[in-house]
Image (cartoon, rainbow, N blue to C red; front, side, top):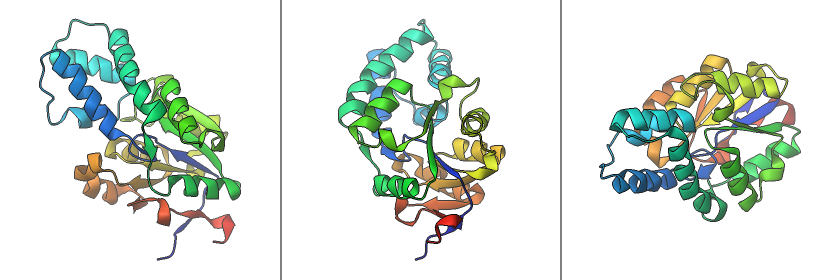
Length: 224
């Protein structure tokens, strides 16, 4: 099967569930965090927080479960639980490194747009030896609203000094894909176990859908 050609100058990647096989970490963290407080994990909780920034997720968690805790303390607890996993255990999705290396060789600029903190993204990308491939790292914590809104995608394109239309975005969850499309980017969905129930909705609005990065699109200029 032929790789599709797309016209882009930069490729922007979400991390969790997109180039990282990492969503299991957050399921474990949710279980640890809520069980410690005697709260069963609701079936819809992971989907409810997956597109939110850490601040938004903490605020949502406090409101939903009536917690008498500060958001900053919850964020710190989540970060401590996650750091060991991200710095040592979390691995890349199949063919992600090969695709990133290919794009870099084609002169395409590479950026991260993620809900993860800078500490976690640096730990996991360095552990997987791909930190140096990227030109830019953007976190949802740097903008006013999380990935349910296009703020992060506009912000990332602006930091690259490119129009959103010159960027291709890779995301695994429907809210992020919808928001990146709203920003005007080319958007590809990437299959992940934890967002399979969103697959049909993703396919309806995305420019393409990938089971892995073997058939990820090539820039038109490459002539591949």
